Length: 62
Image (tube, rainbow, N blue to C red; front, side, top):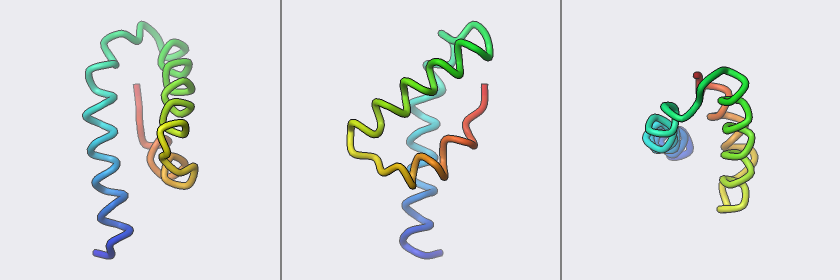
C-alpha cells in the first residue's frame, strides 16, 4: 500500500470517528446534508485539502 493510500485510509478512519458521534444530532437526511456541508467548510478551514475531502466525504453516509 502506498503512503498516499495509507494516509487516505487513516483520514477516512479519523473522519468516521469524528462523524459517528455527531450523527445522533442529525434528525433527517436533509439535516445530515446541511451538517456535512458545514463539516466540509470546517475541514477546509482546518487545512484538509479539497482533494482529500473529495475522496473521503462521498463515502460518509447518514
